[in-house]
Amino acid sequence: MFGGSQKRPNLHLQDMVDLYKLLLALPDERIAGQIFNAGFQNMSIMEIAQTVKRVVREVFPEKGEIPIVTTPTDDIRSYHVNSDKIQRALGFKPKHTVEDAVRDLVRRLQAGKLPNSMDDTFYFNVRRLKSSRPHDRPADRDRHGWCGFIGSHMVDVLVERGFSVRAIDNLAGGREENLASHRNNPDLVLEKRDIRNCSPDDRLFRGARYVFHFAGSATSSPPSSAPRVHVGQRSGHGTYARVRAARAGGEIRLCRSSSCYGLASVPTREDHPIEPRYPYALSKYLGEQAALHWHRVYKLPVNSIRIFNAYGTRSRTSAPMAPYSAFFYAKSWPADRTPSSATVRRPAISLT
Image 1 (tube, one colour):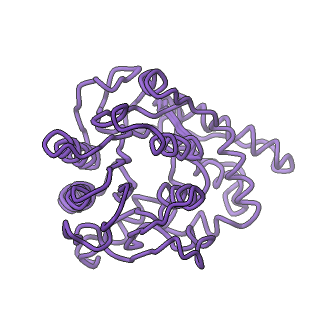
Image 2 (image 1 turned 180 degrees about the vertical axis):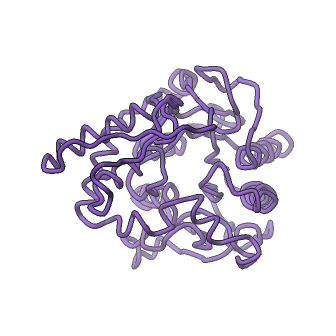
């Protein structure tokens, strides 16, 4: 574990999807032009690790004692979110805990749903970026869209609610298998394309009632070799392309990042000064501002949800607490050593 006292808000995947369902039902005048923090439990990395340890020991008592090994870190980022506004204005309050997500992950590991989680670079954001440098990647690479962690769950919800969904993902970070349950469903059309190449009159957006934007890099600290591509093309240019396309009709729902606050005072509210400390944070904030600009100038219905450490099924094992379940469960990991990160605190929210 790197550090451990750093604090992070967390949001369960189910809660996040429930929030988007709520946004679909609310009238424009209640949410247009608004920014909402969406987080739940503010926990330190050590508290998350201890939760994982307790659950894994309960499920696998034969594993015996599981030590948590800490490593010093210079990552001093520590967040503590205030989500009073979204509860007060929209009546939204998360219901699912970090422990719920840990138990979900353990069940998926038991069922073999996270294959090669200790070796496959898909589960490690920074390792994946380093193994695929910008000059080695095709020019049409992006990151998670509708086949990713959050987007695929949103597809489930929209199809369940009777919507026809047109999804776009170039599969650089997402996986088609996340949408496997909809493979023969005529209400879902998946196009393997790059959102940065979509023109404002692209056929993909014709007749669309809502535009949900989930594409973007999943790591907040890309290697120094990739900041220009990361900032200029992934989150920023992708958001700009989608907002332009949505102007012809439809409403924008942005999935943004809480990282735009930087090293913020806590608990952090939506009116806290913005001070991005990483290219990832800057790109997310620029994309958000582009969308809100379209709202102010062209009256396009837009709202942005600043997500705090979403977790749940289909997440990578590099998510805030997912690695701990994977490490504790993996039989190949040395019995006398478990990585973790102990003094950093994180707010969390469940995606479901």
